[in-house]
Length: 370
Image 1 (tube, rainbow, N blue to C red):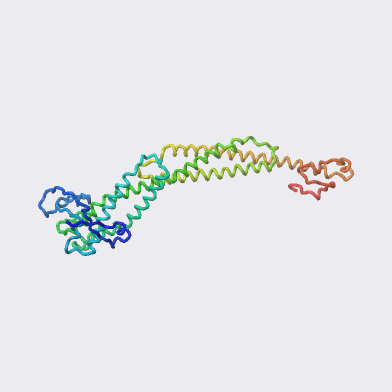
Image 2 (image 1 turned 90 degrees about the vertical axis):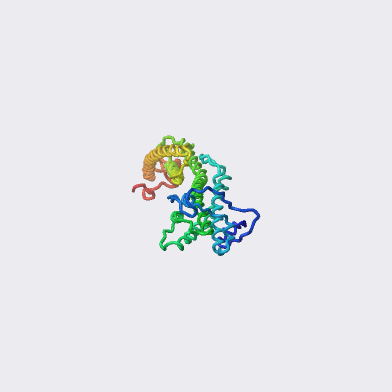
């Protein structure tokens, strides 16, 4: 019995230009299975499941690919299709076995090296899976039945699996059974890929999420927050304004961090919807506690800003009175002014007025509100 092998890399780069070589050992051997009753050539019981239908619907079994390629009447196009179907079935089985060996304890704790390695491997498998052109292979196999059956036949793999196969030759039987029996592995592989894609996404997002939680916590417990002593109307207005701006900036930064962490947490939870995996409880608890602390901190910051605003108004009112007092003194007659202010440095040193070398008049000063 002749045997063969297929250059897998060539098949993936150009699926319809495969180079076949003849190895010394057979490949894709199928173990014999007992008959399920009925005469040879008679269709058996039909099953609604596609894979079971092909498995039990007939007593005929497909031979090896080498037998198909050795058929005297097989065309080059049929050889390529049979080889591609065989290659796809082997690849699907290989990928399933590989991904199933990846360890997972459900705690979302994996080294960064493992995360990077599996992320790259997922990309490669997904790219090669697309290159197998499974949907096109299904269409080619269905064309066999379209040609033998009535036009308008439902083009689904379930319909294909329910059709009697006793009238098929060895080539048609091989591609049909090989492809249909590979479909459950394809569905299983896609489920594995989806699960691991979500896991990798969360493992990549988790460090940033946890860092945001830590930054928010540092804001809430910082020395800046602890130093909020009651403000005094005697404080200079410019210092009160600076403190008010610092608190407002801290509010905005803390709000941005908290909201960003919340959006990242929502994205991770959405990705796990319908999955058996769950995020660690401490992640969710930490965020909920942080959100409650942030709400309390915001209320305190708002009250503090109100106190500062009140203190600023009182400080400005006091400053205004001092200015008016100085103006009143400066409005005295030149004689009285020179007598009372002779040798005095009050006008030169008072913080509410600029330095004056001569007694000012009312017309030379800008009085607030007048």
